[in-house]
Image (tube, rainbow, N blue to C red; front, side, top):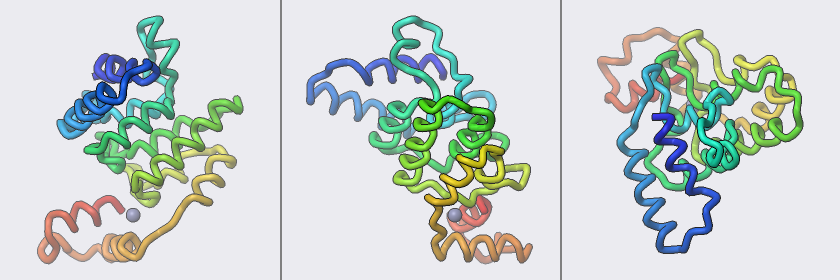
Length: 188
Ligand SMILES: [Zn+2]
């Protein structure tokens, strides 16, 4: 899975022609739709935002540093990836990004994290997803800088507010809502 991410993303910096780029994007779209998972439930997008996705080849190491804005960008632009996918701890990619932003001191990485947050936002990520510890992404970081940045980007829509109220009320919504709406409510 990690090897797959490296191999696919090693194309990012290559000078490729428009036609090849189109084929590459189509291929990535297919991979995204296959929804590959690691043994802890991470998707390619989860892997792209965590620093412990270590490269194992010189060429890739030179081109792909994680968290990787380019990787996130390509994965989202190709389509077919769920930006709110949950790993086995019910962490979204945004949760993992927040968790790993604790203690980051260098400006370059902080800028990358900010740009990835923006990209995830453009891709339709939910700021208010709750992981298995009952925490939103913003509650998963001790970095005041990242907390403030995420808070500034946050917009809650009516659907999210309604889902939170239903979830909090502890009513048995599984009997009256569709599977899609139940899954959506579960996120909150
Ligand atoms: Zn939401």
